[in-house]
Image (tube, rainbow over all chains, first blue to last red; front, side, top):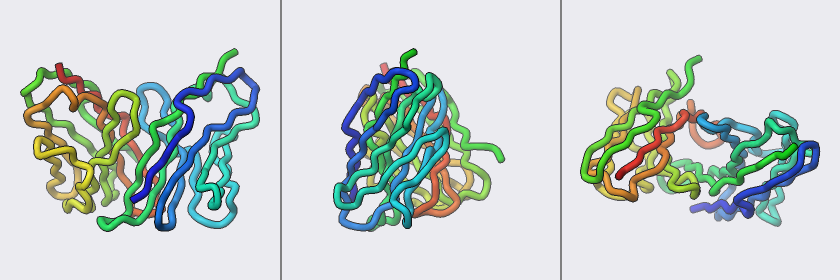
Length: 115
Length: 114
């Protein structure tokens, strides 16, 4: 079984400032890693994913994340945020379980971008 | 293509009543998942269908919850009888395959049990 921890429940930041949303996971088997974003009254949308290969992955809207196997982390970063980035962000881990592949999510991080 | 559709978007019922949530996945997606989020906590896995078969139902809280996917198309999640702690947002997601496949989510069904 795997687990996901998002270390910050809320992150306030000023517009045009950089931001990092932290995610740590644990798993006894290989994993696939994802970040999803949820805007108000919408479903979760994929921001980016790590499947294999380069540990730095780039996603939509200028976001990127780096897979660090030794730290079991997959932190999300953006060098300069916009008001429109205000949303809730979820880290997710997919791993092979006895019942097949299962994706579990963290508790989410609310990003507030202030003018 | 049409996305994942969930109905109703919001349901308010009294304790002891029954509610049925419906999910229409993307056409051709064999994998269908139900998740629940309670009071700002993690989005918790409930179960996974592959076509009409339950692949993994390890997350179902108890026998008051019944999920079906007859014909391998849409799915329903029935809560009977509902309890206060069942309140939350129920998300449905679908994918063509499993493993590295990205999940496409519906907007969720918010259930409030009074």
